[in-house]
Amino acid sequence: MENSGRSYNSRELVSVMASRVLEDGKIVFVGAGIPLIAAALAQKTRAPHLTIVFEGGSVGPEIKPEYVPLSTNEMRAGTRAFMMPSVQEVFLFQQRGYVDYSFLGAAQIDKFGNINTTVIGSWDKPKVRLPGTGGANDLISSAIRTIVVTMHEKRRFVEKVDFVTSPGFLGGSESRRKSGLIFGGVYKIVTDLGIMGFENDDKEMCLEAVHSGVSVDDVLSNTGFKLRVSPDVKVTESPTAEELRILRSLDPKRYYI
Image (tube, rainbow, N blue to C red; front, side, top):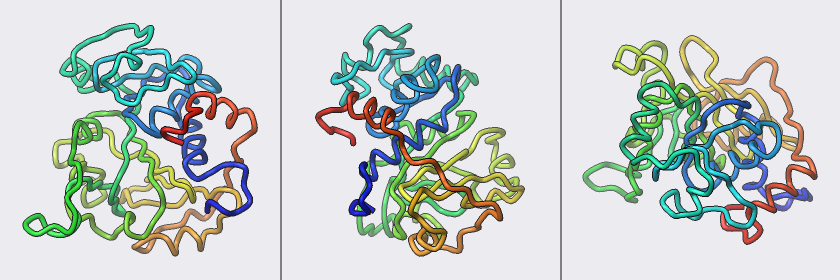
């Protein structure tokens, strides 16, 4: 998708689309990378009262253009923050229901939104060992809504993940609730091809929108399982010149975009 004649790349596209999902006045728990850039963009455009929370222990920091944090544990992640609590306290805030959104990435994700960031292949003899959970399991288990941002590839979108690092809707339907995770789950998956959701009773991933220049077939051919398609698939509005200007001003050295 990089050479389609667009004025933006795939990471910029995902950043803009993810920023549009966030609502003003909400609280979002983010890590470094696209989630951070997307949240900062949302804050500087349509959601000025969005509160950003970092795992490293920072609530409500200001993300300054050209000074985007490269880690959630560095001093730039605490610029003009409301609070600087401990890591344990930050996660306790979420467990108590104070966090509206969490942002996650995925090495693998399946049709019920379960995420794997642990191993590719078997546990005993994996093909690849991945970084693991970090705080991802905590986030998806207790955030009110989780947004997943990732590139759209067959190897990522699989019928069943090799390892459940972070539980989505487990086996679908009421299985997440019956496991003891009484709320939350994956809200939206934002990729460079489209946006998926889980707005159905069986909690199976469904294509809700494609990006400009992308067809439904493009999405299906890059998905490793039979993806449900909404009868009313929408086409997202392309990133505006103003969104791209602000996005690039946040990260002019292209650490993330």
